[in-house]
Amino acid sequence: MSSKNKIEANNLTKHFERKIALSSLSFTIKQGELIALIGPSGAGKTTLLNSIAGLVPISGGELLIDGQPLSTFKKGKVFAKKVGVIRQQFDLIGPLAVIHNVLAGKLSDWGTFKSLFSLLITQEKDIALKALKRVGLPEKAYEITSTLSGGEQQRVAMARLLVQKPEVILADEPVASLDPARADDILAMLTKIAAEENQTLITSLHSVEYARKYFNRIISMKNGEIFFDLPTEQVSDELLAELYQIKSGGVG
Ligand SMILES: Nc1ncnc2c1ncn2[C@@H]1O[C@H](COP(=O)(O)OP(=O)(O)OP(=O)(O)O)[C@@H](O)[C@H]1O
Ligand SMILES: [Mg+2]
Image (tube, rainbow, N blue to C red):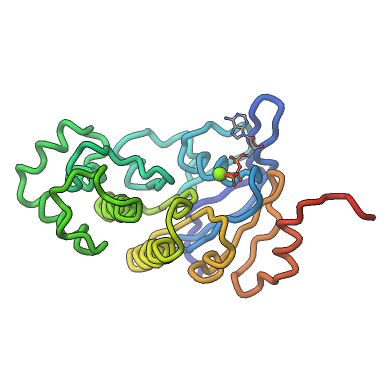
């Protein structure tokens, strides 16, 4: 028996004024799938991820999570358990100690102030320290977050995600600002965590190499449409060349 659809889009459309950013997309994603979202700049990757995260309202069609329209989910604790987002800037609070940022994952509906107090609870502290250990930063718990390197801060964001434990993780170019070794490291960790927790992961990437290395399925977008949606092993160099072609409709 096949598992249930975690995310389902039916003719999903998004326009900004007259600009069509997503043009009638349809796809289904099952729980536990690891998906890379690729395509040229302006293709609609961020718009799609933001739509699934409920950060931008859709203009038409349907977007379901666990069979329920996204619009029926209330923001707050319940939604934070469903969908977690990693952005390029990680959304960490720089002046706070690392451990507070990690606990913010658990207390997404409490706000910073209460998450500071949560450290008084030993159990919560242990959860945060365990997560930091898992991402390889146990010794940084009490350092000020903004003093960490970009790669380390990305690990803190990962620890926060471990604590939040959402069913779906959306990551928009999570490694864009990192050097290749760090980028590889973070993607290895992100995909490993998602696989271990049976989480659904959708990551937009500009690197086809990483998409192929760490993800089972690649969805490519071009001009607001799905260009191909294939198991990684079926993605040929020819298709990729066509996807990223700069000229369109030129030579005939
Ligand atoms: N808030 C907005 N207002 C108007 N147009 C927008 C807005 N956000 C996105 N767009 C347009 O929608 C299209 C898709 O943008 P999007 O940011 O989703 O692309 P992308 O695939 O993430 O690109 P990149 O790889 O450069 O991040 C672009 O043409 C963009 O200009
Ligand atoms: Mg983008």
